[in-house]
Length: 220
Image 1 (cartoon, rainbow, N blue to C red):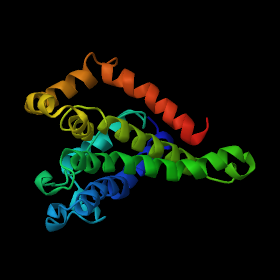
Image 2 (image 1 turned 90 degrees about the vertical axis):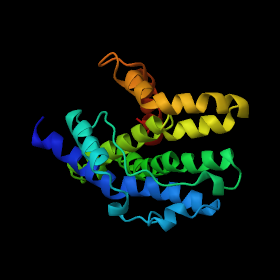
Image 3 (image 1 turned 180 degrees about the horizontal axis):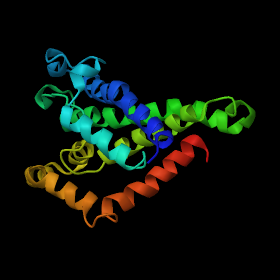
């Protein structure tokens, strides 16, 4: 991979670590706070300060996977936002709202960058005046946010989508299955997204959804 290809990916990853991840976790914290739980605020997580949300392993994995794939695929995480679900209004529905707030913030960030990019694509004479590295960085930033949104909405613990799933399951069924899924969730994730290598079920599901959302937002 040459520098021309690598640089916009590196810039987009840096923006994700400094802006994307903090906004995602802040959204969880804000939703929890609005629903009655101040745990995140107590631990200094109701902030957009990237240092408060940075997880070394998750940040390094985000950089390595997206740089290694040229911005096409990857994963990583920030420091999980602490939430005491017992304090939340609405019980499991409140927990689902808090969980969904993070992925929704990724969609909002993707859309905020996609709108000007869509306009530039529709006006080639203006786009020609923008450095290619800026356009490429915008594309990768949109892709990273959409990938993280879709990935986080998979209904497998510890991903946000699992909490949404449990909220809408019949209470007895959720009570039976939640401990099992939470115990083996990480192993299930590895199987779904990495086996077999290069053609996993998770990637085959994520890919078409990503392409569809990107096309919807950007218009290409």
